[in-house]
Image: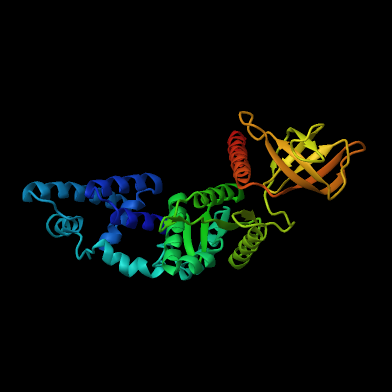
Length: 397
């Protein structure tokens, strides 16, 4: 209900098309959330508690009354004036409506929950809403994910360009987040350059897809100060209920641990919390790839089979064992329509998988940012495809 209230407030605040646009948006919200949208809209504007079916009928009558008033007065009429006249002159059965302008309502009801700089919800609101959302997830047996973001090297931006520019950076990043998340998601400023996003009814994979989308948008954001481009990146940590914790404090702590891991491996990363020390989710990657024990493009390469892939490394299966610590070159065909990408890696694990095969874990070395983004896009695409396939399988069972 809180997400519906916020959506209606935004509609009432930001509808340059006037009452027609407000009406269209409320109708869309009613299709998504049910007839409670009409009750909520009238409650925000009048403080009246109106049953949802009656609210839908009254809403339509108010919209029609606005057209009547404009035709009679031959001038524009505000929405609040229309509502006041309707309840005072037309529908006298409902008495004492408390008509308020939307900015007054916002000042009293919403401003206390918001961070003034970013427009996101503030720390106090986050502390109150996370336990409620987690309780709802438990009650309805739904997943919930929490993303802990932190701007990389934000102190350097403040020190180099001043706090006013730092504030503008925070505003721009917050705008990217609010434009990327769903209406039901809750974005908060936790403190300083730390930002949190609560994702109700969201499991680990779709949460990671969203977090990576935000990370990439921030990285690609154009931000200039006095003709000088300021490069901005963001790191994130992700934890999910119920797999990572079943209480709000531990869930937040685990997301924070994942964020710390993202910072420790070079920043501009999103890391999923895991208690087995894996810093990235892996996806199945069943391909024949080229491997050699020198530079990636060196001749006399060996063809081996890959098993899974992450942004940090790859697991191979080979008839030949490799020495742990050995540097190897890899050629991966991520997209059949593109050229293979070349990577350097170091062998970090060798285990016997059968009498004649070895599992070889390789960690990538000094990955170029362009290649890292290419890997990210592939992994997200694969996660999305796997998620859609799982949904189709569930629907057919």
